[in-house]
Image 1 (tube, rainbow, N blue to C red):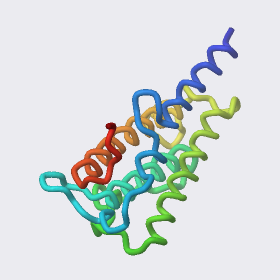
Image 2: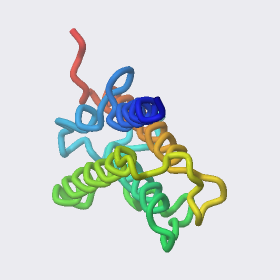
Image 3: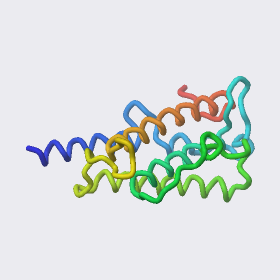
Image 4: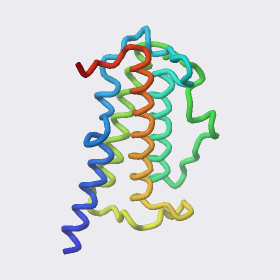
Length: 163
């Protein structure tokens, strides 16, 4: 019984990390953003597509590294979690950010999927965090900012219409 419920919990968390269901996936949210709009901020919103992409990458990296590396030092808040510019410095930087986000997400998913990972054990270098808590934090954080990314895209006219 414990093995079945453990697998079910891991499957649920992996589903949340992957997006979908009631949330857009990372790949769908990021697909097809025209380069000329990546650094634009719509009126009334504080972020561009680039700043949201980089924030997602930087925050996810911090959560992942905290979860698996006792020597990890988190960046300063908030400056270490946001890019210094609204615009990507290059197409290569844009593509690298996407690839690094995907890589780190897969690494967190592998950590959660590994039956040797005790999802409920306290992370020894933390102050009460568990891998389960960090994975749920990551899923929640990604979902929130992917929603913001969709709002930016809609206001910039860069989200496919549902017509």
